[in-house]
Length: 64
Image 1 (tube, rainbow, N blue to C red):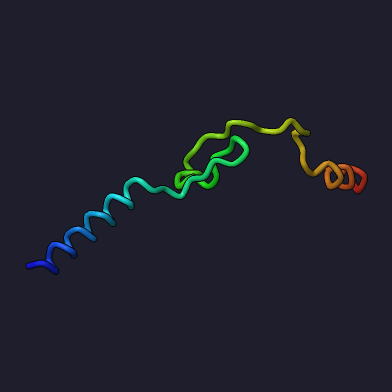
Image 2 (image 1 turned 45 degrees about the vertical axis):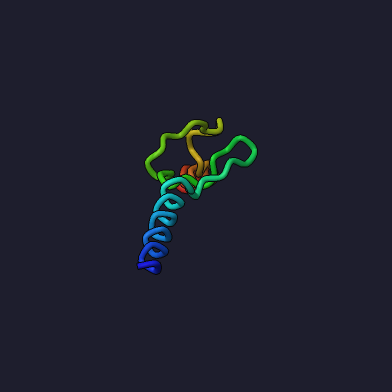
């Protein structure tokens, strides 16, 4: 009966650790990586040109 208690204790310990330990880390104010990063909304988008392919657009206009 003694080994059965050890197995039950190990299972409970593993379940408790699996629930409380995540894979998130806080580095420089950022949460990296989040398990749900694909579903999270964007908190910051850097300002920049609306057309990221300006050189290509200019060349296409010249070719016309």
